[in-house]
Image 1 (tube, rainbow, N blue to C red):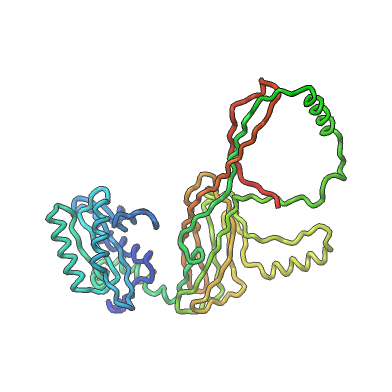
Image 2 (image 1 turned 135 degrees about the vertical axis):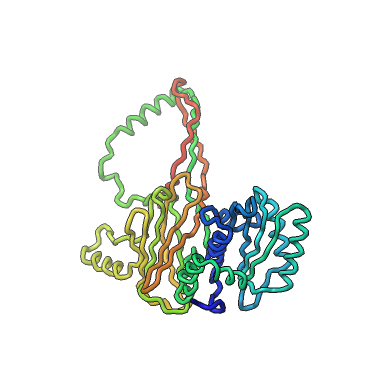
Length: 380
């Protein structure tokens, strides 16, 4: 068994929050019902983890506070007051709020927690407690399921570890573009001159212009729903990573298309041998491969990551209509190590308004306004 002094603190807030969820799930005997509260960026009302606890006859909450071990950072009285005030708005009312922190035990902080606990109880509000890192380690020695999970999954993972982000961000917002078109019908009576002109225009339209009038270089149509995602992979561990790959996927119902932005040269009029040579070069440099309609695989050519090294790549997606939030699910694989997680993408469409006035010369053809929303397509 690993000695208490050898148990390292979690290297990130996600692991610490999960540790608290599993540990208090055992302590409160509510492994099946304890949950993380909401998601990152939402108002959590002072509670990161919660559950109904039979022992207390109501809901209890945990506020997880990671602290820098190198500067011996501690919870401040201001932080404690703010989180207690937030927890007052949690619904339904909680019976207990635990401040779980990676900070070391501190008599001053514990004294302030006891003071706030007495004040809250006197008002008929929830009790308040604190668990510093040494307290958490003591509990881990008692609750073997969580202990084994922590030792096997988090304890040594900073030996080899990666951080996958959207260029440093865990959550981004994308803006696919659409056009909302309103067709408005108006009646206009033609003058005799306009009637004659319209008849001649119809004759002109029916005239066969011939294939020679069709341009060879037609403009390229661009769908503005496509959104580019820039991915950064950083080696934050203490080992050199070799032959890595990152698999990125989405739920099939969350996206319309995914693109690795790789294209072979197929220029019209170019010599076939020249095109083949260009495409061989493109293949040699290729790093991103589409494996399924909702999945990509990134295999960097420079496959050795030294410590603090990083790699970038990008992909593009069209989110499905109506999806407001989607997850990019990733799995990192290399020699003797793997890690998986997800990044959050908020979808806020940009809608351009367009009004088309259609003049009709027959009153029977006047219709109510017709509204349609379609992808914004531009020509380049």
